[in-house]
Image (cartoon, rainbow, N blue to C red):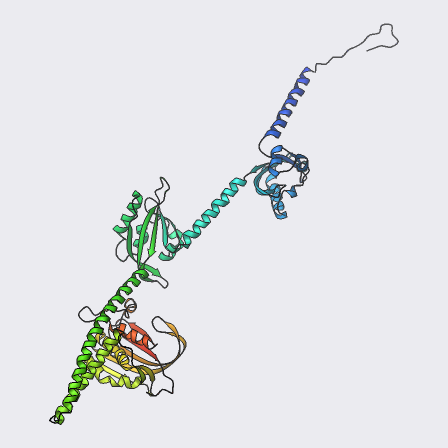
Length: 529
């Protein structure tokens, strides 16, 4: 320091050591350069937002969104969101999660400059928690591929589930110990269960609850063992009682097949159960139809030969009656014999009708009179232990029909009723008029409209359970045993009624009796029997 105005001028010098400060500044600069290098070279998109505008972004962020740096660093954040509602949702989530200095994590979609949407997971934090208006740091992770894979997987699972539930057969997924893990819609419907009720049960527990005897059996075990060992699938038939609405059950035949699931060590098995009850029934009907056809051909051939014999017999009887030496008493006996021959001719016509080798002889008839004509024959059939109560409609019931077939209907229904009253009883046969306006009648029930001439045959016999009623019109179905019934009586009745465009109803109660009601279309008033 100079001291002016003094002879001894001097300089005072102050020195300070700044080497350490320069070293600190150098280190700070190096750290800043390092951080800036990391910021710009990191593959993770990073940026800073102040007042809903991007002010800083690294190259990875520019690459993610497809914007040049100068455009992205002044871009309002609302431009990144594809809808305003999504913008508001993300803002609310950030404000809620960042309160108190927390880090917000939000999944959303951003729109690139080219308009393409990218799925991201956004993580953000305020730079200064006590001064949030000064901005926040954010990092974005591109999860587009993962989200797309998840959506593809979800769609694939939905498609498989739709196929699984839409399959017309029951499918049950089992683990290696035969515990149920998953059921499709058809399986749930078949057993009347939902997943929580079935999951964890063994397949033997599930099916055993519906088996008429014990658990279903060796056939199912063999199928499962084959699947576990990778052998050819064994198919087994299971006879179960399947629940129906109204706490009832039906007999069902299920075809079971087991297929291993190729899932390495899990050892899971897909068990498929196909309800083949209807297929079995149809196959039996085809067999019965074939047997009926064969029997019809045989009956037709015999009837033709027998009819020729009866024709010759009738001719000889006519010649005898014209002989001058025939007395009146012998003439009456010959007439009785001719009556029996005519009855035999009617029987041969029935056989020919059954074999479809003779067309029906359609004519105008009165159902009341047709019933009265066979009253005596019905009485002979019933015997002394069964009382016959017969009544007819007060006015004629004109129909257009084949007389032999109408008599066949009456006689077969009466014989069937007689056989059901082994201990005796009452057979009530009556005719009446019925007008319908669309009510269901017949087996199977169908809406019927019109005027009908009806025949009712009611007995006080043993009756029939519903399981028997389902089959009574099937050819060769009988409950009388092989020595008593052929199973053709009611089948012939059903066929004859169908030929006349009529219908038949049946009601029956075990231990009380059965009632058969037949409806034949009434003929127009202009038709006179």
